[in-house]
Length: 206
Ligand code: 5GP
Image (cartoon, rainbow, N blue to C red; front, side, top):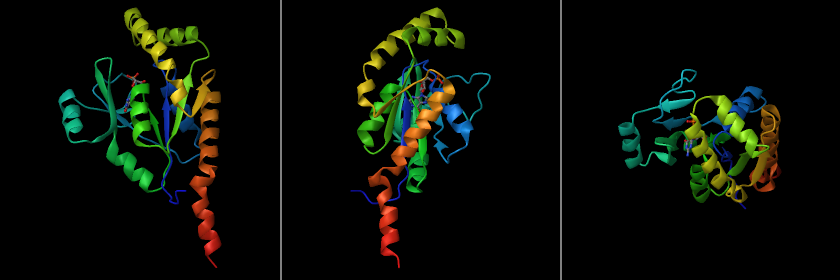
């Protein structure tokens, strides 16, 4: 049994277009917790509604590749021609300080983290149906039809990896999905092997 006060790492993943970003935002708007969001780094172009340093750290391909060589990522992936990666130093520091850190990343990256960090919680977000996924990608309006079909193909292969996760959450409604994720995090936090060290300290103290 591990006795430490290291924070919990929560990985939210799932196929492209399932609404990971929207659910993650809803989770953080709830403010009923002290979760910390790990802002990823990307070489993708900034969308008009995005803020550098809040939604992503937007960097050039050269800068990203320099950081890959310097081992500065917990994981990174090339996703449809762009790099996306989780900066290692910040995640490590927050976990060391006992904080709960949330990553919202695509499936291959999540599985890379799973191979490195065994005691994190891995959550797979799924759409209520494949049709709803297609509709969501279409409504988002950020991809043309060809790109949507490519994302659907990718999603089909990603669905097959759901069994590698600890929990599956259906995104039938953004707020319901965020509620379920918070319930999972709370339950994980109360898990004996994560919380017993506090009580052992209490018992030992006079
Ligand atoms: P978008 O371009 O729509 O913001 O993101 C594309 C995909 O990249 C989404 O599935 C998103 O969750 C994922 N993503 C965002 N940040 C990271 C990251 O740091 N690592 C990995 N592997 N995927 C990420």
